[in-house]
Image (cartoon, rainbow, N blue to C red; front, top):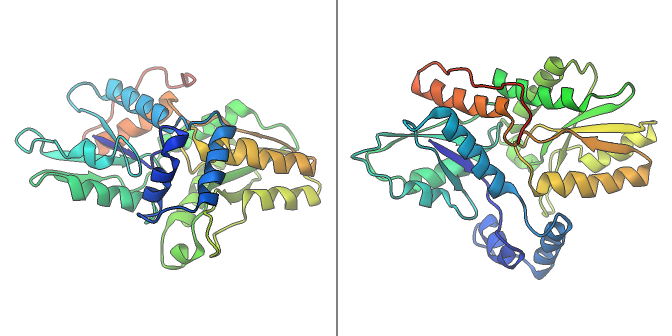
Length: 302
């Protein structure tokens, strides 16, 4: 069982090497390095992505039991996907099930995780990847649980967000934006949210157009129409990291303050038992075996 995620640098000193990997081997400009260091410094100097991903992997391991070993691999930083699968013994391991820690499929994220795993996997081991689970009932339940915990107040707007992609990628047939919209629709229905908006965030630093509206643009437009309170529900992410802790909690929050809007967001899924149930169900589905219900479905994350 291989959980796959994007990855994050261990320290600010790693930023140039990390950004070089993110950019496919192209060194970043000093300005980009300085900007990203500033963003990470604003959240304490380090993203919790790797730590939380390890906690998710440990929770899934406890849920599945010792018969199905769980490993974690990152595309852009240690522990790398290649390192997680390269030493597997074909005499003992027949199949690897890959699950991206990203519910919606994109050629720019999930597909690259798959390619990294296939390139490093020893011959004779079968690799099956869960390419998307954006509409899985347990995932919808998990996000809806976070919305209900936040208890949207009367008159408080709700906006679902996900990471932006370049418009050209969507125009080429990438299903990501459609899947994000479906996740939003299902979570809103499950959480009893009758009216909601949708925005994208964390667009890359490139001159080409990215899908929108951007979250900050959404906030400004809403404020101009009288919006006073906003609850952000990031459904394109499954744990806290820079895109949550800086792009929403710092950057979007600053925009909201400037516009006189009170902004808050739902808690990330992290190790919410219902989300771990989701991952376990995906494993059992891939194996063709029914998943057993986990304990404490309604408990809060640790």
